[in-house]
Amino acid sequence: AGLVVDDDGFYIDATAGGGGHGEAILQALGPSGHLLACDRDSAAMDEAGRRLAPHRGRVTFLQCAFSSLAQSVAPHVRRHEAAGAAGILADLGVSSHQIDEASRGFSYHQDGPLDMRMDRSTGVPAVDLLQQIEQAALVKLIRDYGEERRAKQIAGAICRRRGEGLLSSTSDLREAVAST
Image (cartoon, rainbow, N blue to C red):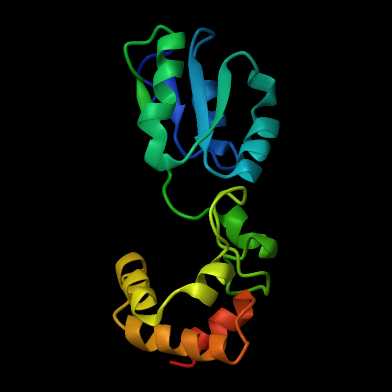
């Protein structure tokens, strides 16, 4: 309710996910209002597309990384003759849909392939990264991105399991981390 200040404005849902926030924005908008629904995850874009289908014509979908959002949305802002977005919503973090789907490789609760990519069409699956990365680089990665104070011990455990051929699934990674 606090986001939509211009019923006919141009709004951006920078992390569309399953489309719930986008749906609420669209319901608050007037008939001339428009939403640009963005997400890096193609599966999330598909889900948002299904949920927001009743609003066709008032919503545009754009698959893009959050890091390239400014460059990616600029043409859409111009297309809608907007001076800029009247509002932007960003629900940051991993979505429950990604964690709940074992095949995505994010869950500690279900075994699955060690993937962990937000966009499975780009980048390197976690299993490939963990098979190739040097231990010192892995320590830095865990410390910098995971903000983990035990990064050195965790990296050591991962490298030991990798050396034993025991690092291909989310359960394998969970067991490596738990062993520290």
